[in-house]
Length: 312
Length: 248
Image 1 (cartoon, each protein chain N blue to C red):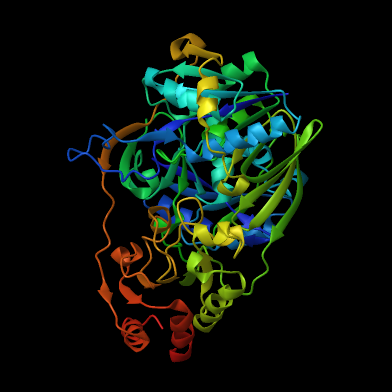
Image 2 (tube, rainbow over the protein chains, first blue to last red):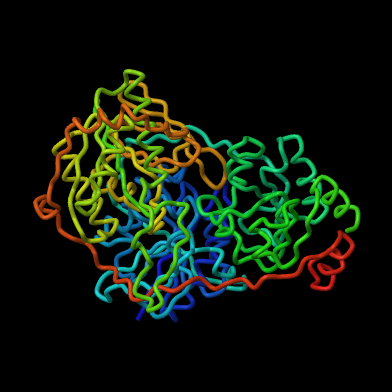
């Protein structure tokens, strides 16, 4: 009998879409209860969004001024306390979940199962290792809590339409004061969020400069797409770090992925292999990206991208 | 201040990993082994902090089989002052590794622990966070910049939303991301020098660590392959194909 506690991810009063993907994963367990825990300084608005996710039984709200910013070592003792009575504790495999969930696992005396791709049974899961070049089936003992991060690209977002009850939760765990939030510098963008966008246009090193990336942004805007990039383009300083797609960046699963001037290093392909349709545009016909592309076009991206934008 | 650096040996990032036909593991016989690239970055950062006069000693820590010695010597050749090799043939899991690290911390009393945000073999991304938890000290994961002032550090973290800055008390655990620095190349004279640097070996069993290796890997499989698609000759053909699939 599984009882799942999902740690809600949120920022500025908005629930992150990754949380609904965790609910999908929990649903695959045929759980008796799927509860969502919102840790915040004022979590009502986020909790109300979580309560609408289909499949959620109950939303627990733990308000505390110390939770104003998501500091892993502050949140973890509270999560570990709230986890009593749950067989599974899930977080998304985002930088938030990757930061906090191992702390929870350590407090509960288990290693975490990172990046759950599929649920085989309540205590057996598949996950990728070696940048997705091998998929392992991991069995966990039934007498210990399962702490896991959910690989969001492997799970659709559970729909809305639920009306879970909301409860406030008072947690007494002692919280450390050794860590202070200073700032969060966010790229301002009206474009869709890269992690959850249905369409993504990505650029690579071949763009050559930050200025040249304008043609990627322009095509993305025509498509209503998010913008991504290869590690090479981020390392070169063409675009900020949060646009990186791949093993160590974001793992995404859009319906349409257009890779422009990206050769297709294995670490990048790891981040896109769950995309619905992959389009590759590259001047090198031998580039490995063409091995995974549904549609490949060999040519100069500086001609092709504007032409494509015009043709849409 | 002393800095402890986690320095794991993994299958080199250029190796194309093959799953054994019987699903019992991946083929590691004869493949090139190297330092986890993230750990190389952690070590480089430790050396830069020391060379700025903010730390006095850099100690590299490896947990692995007896034949890890050449790997550890590389860490010393890069510039670490000394090394600790915790010898174990078992593929210890993150919580066990964190417990073992904690034992070393109790002995070494470092002011800072640096390690890669993840190892590129099991891609777990857990040990640093677990260590900070067990130690009761701050953590700053996915570091893209570290600035130490006195007894605290400002760490810029590469997070999904952008760049977050945390101010943490020391001692602390910081796990590093790709863009923190570019590790130096090892020069031949440094390899010679490394041979005389102190390397302490400790049998894992002698640490007195309670194992937490509860996860059992039952099966290895290659990933599902995407089938190769078609090449289109021009933009018009591409647009037609995408329209046909209802994507544009």
